Amino acid sequence: MKQVLIERYGTPWEVARCAEVPDVGEPGADEVVFDVLAFPINPADMSFCRGGYRLKPPLPATPGAECVGRVTAVGSAVTHVKPGDLVINLQRENWTQRRRVKGDDAIPLPKGIDLRQAAMVRINPPTAQLILSDFVELKEGDWVIQNVANSAVGRLLIVLAKQRGLRTVNVVRRADLAGELKALGADLVIVDGDDLAARVAAVTGSAAIKLGVEAIGGAATGRIVDSVATDATVVHYGSMSGEDPKVGRSNFVYRGVKLTGFMLGRFLARRSPEKIRAIYADLAGQVMAGTLSAPVDTVYPIEKIKEALAHADKGGRNGKILVSPNGQI
Ligand SMILES: NC(=O)c1ccc[n+]([C@@H]2O[C@H](COP(=O)([O-])OP(=O)(O)OC[C@H]3O[C@@H](n4cnc5c(N)ncnc54)[C@H](OP(=O)(O)O)[C@@H]3O)[C@@H](O)[C@H]2O)c1
Image 1: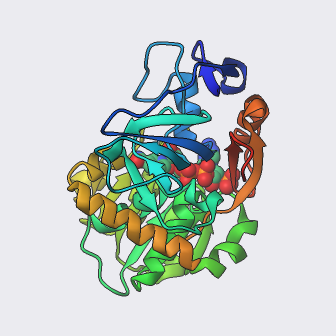
Image 2: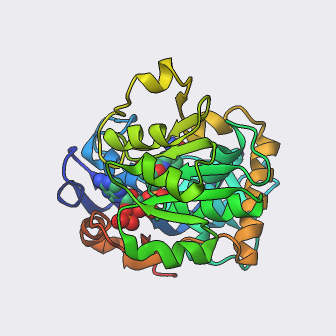
């Protein structure tokens, strides 16, 4: 079977290759085997290839934080999924044609779900949802500000916030995105820049923004922190710039703003397996209903992983880059 391998850490499309590897074999009693139907290339996967991610396994290694698969075989003790079912996988190493995992790591998805969207259910939708639920008690009408608003997480957050009656200020780096994001439910769309806090105050009527959501790092974190209310919380969940947050200390000392971080695994680990399955069942239901979706730019075969990675690195895409390892989407 085919699998993506990196044999050194470095520029993703230089270090990754599509290799021939032995098949995963039959499932043990508590295991599930599935064909990988599609996986997205996420920013964290790019960092993984570069050796900049928090996990840096010995090489050769296979990237891939998420995927959607179709079950081909289950062990005798597995009862919650059967051959033919669609699943997402809570474990990594998904850039491959086939996976063999513990039954508990295979989360069933509803029949008929759009496979491209299903490939992106595992990480970004719960990230947007838990960032909105786990830090600040927000009530209808409250304001939230986020940057990278055009990212997959950002777009999902706009929709989930709107469902709860929250209002969003969406910070982007391209002004031409305003119409698209407003169509999703964004209240305000504003271009990032030095005077962000003053411009946000002007367009919101100096609203007290209770939650800031931030995934750029460097001075951009500081601009979100400057834009929120006294005693507000800012959640840093990614670093598209590769820089550590740079924040003016007066925000902490004089205004009591709290800067904290989010990592999906850490926040899911606080929940029981039943609760985790319930979260994904709800999110998958919303994908089926068409309320949650993430745009897809291009789908590549696994043999073209180098082209796919180079494309994923380019700014200004119209959505995610997906890979279809078995040619089924
Ligand atoms: N902590 C967690 O558990 C967790 C979970 C999921 C995602 N994340 C993080 O969330 C972030 C977004 O992920 P995603 O999958 O939603 O991303 P995505 O859909 O691939 O989009 C990336 C976004 O980043 C913007 N961007 C890229 N480089 C930038 C830069 N140097 N400065 C400002 N903006 C930049 C892009 O802007 P354009 O649209 O203008 O090109 C695009 O909107 C990533 O940092 C990812 O690692 C974290």
